[in-house]
Length: 249
Ligand SMILES: [Fe+2]
Ligand SMILES: [Fe+2]
Image (cartoon, rainbow, N blue to C red; front, side):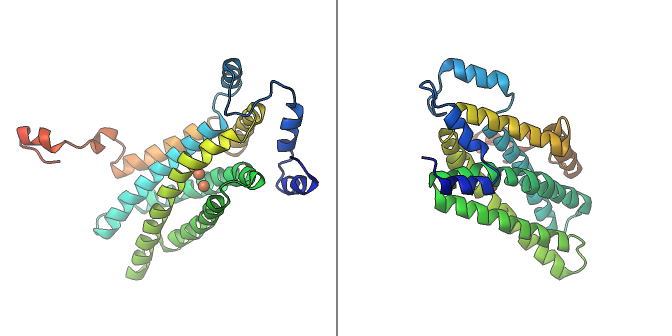
């Protein structure tokens, strides 16, 4: 299973820790994560408050909320409505600092490399990796046009934001529904447990204590600025109900 070539790939990626876990867990009770024993599952829960995949998926929740912010800004841009440039700057800063420089780096360093080693979903992983790169270019385009100095910049900004939203919705959905569930089955429990700790330590190192909560509160601040914070405002009134009350959807 482990040969020198594979070890070289992992060493280059700073992932030699992955080689230790199966060796250390070479005991008969060692099992891949897809076949948990109840006591082991409890132990994992107690040792790590947020598991590695929970961590990545809640970060996708932040991404989703920023995509909603982008949608609202795009709608205002295209309708020539008041456009708070501060909201765009702050949302893009979260994309760059939290999603691209942190979340996507974790995926590339710890998730994608595991698929490459397992030779699984290679086409999908390559597409996801390319999309991370395109996302960075789109963010550069968005920043270069955020001053809205001309009608051309306005058009370019709208096109870049539209492309960003269009790419990242299926990107994160594919990771949530295909990549992450499979990733879980490629790891031993100890390996998965260790990864949760690594993610939490990296988050604390980059953003300090309560780093995730701080990012969420920044997102909430932008949502409030744009009037899209109230979740109930997204609840539609079904036609069958509105007919009785004389209201529209
Ligand atoms: Fe990704
Ligand atoms: Fe992701």
